[in-house]
Length: 353
Ligand code: PMV
Image (cartoon, rainbow, N blue to C red; front, side, top):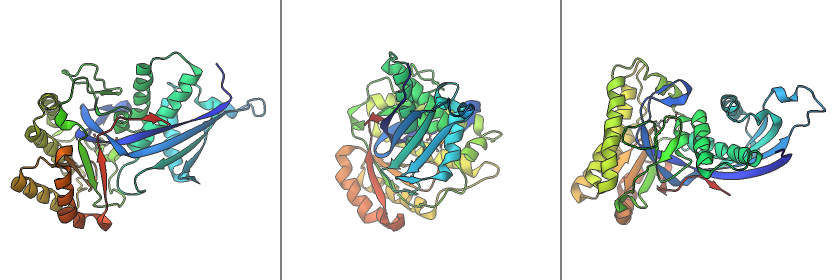
């Protein structure tokens, strides 16, 4: 098959980990399995236009990747090295990459520099587009192969991105009791999930929109030689085991214990690495304490989780949404930068537009 030109457009959502990925081996192989809720509203939308290079006019034109990058319609030079590195890493899986010139036109549905990482949704959206071209060149692949390979490619862009291809609950990393789980790509959690998690809500409180002082790449690296690493990796397996039962039983009290402990453990790893660092801000702690107080007083099953930053994800079932949103508006908005927060919920993964 030969295709001269065309374009695809995919959206891919962000995701929020319940059991955290923190620490990796070579080739973006996770040190422990993780599980996340795929989000619905926080998305990257990426259009990939491609034109076959004209090799008759320049002999060595095939030696390099060729692409333009647009962010919200404007050329974006500073994202290019990351994309270049991504293309280098995935070339062995997509040997046609150097045959084309690409225009990658991308935008996010969440505010730019909100402290919400766009790498997961961004790399997932790009991987889906590249797989659409791969499928056009090699028709006949199964849908399962398509999604698995898309997730594998996304993983090579940014580890957690491999969990953004599918919904609603995605596992990445080998785990003895989750059939089909793999270090190479994310898979949909294979068992039925209790109705308590249906339309589960995630309200993201934007505490600090500044640039992180320590990138997640450096953070992952600091798990090498970390004094608590081996115990931490074993704990992630144990916590995932417990979540398997919790997804079946719908026990929200147990869910809360696992999820909050995972969030604090992630930050405890950062605080005890060498060099050590702290990504939480004073308002992160204010919010955590306010959530605990509210939960004690009301018994409403609301909890928090954190990723590698100061923002707080507030997680709760749909049937308490009204009360929790009132609480957020009355008690928590004051801790958010410019009072900003984003309402999201569990979603289904990447979509071809
Ligand atoms: O995908 P990365 O390399 O940006 O790592 C993200 C790690 C956490 O967000 C902190 C946890 C996770 O599992 O998503």
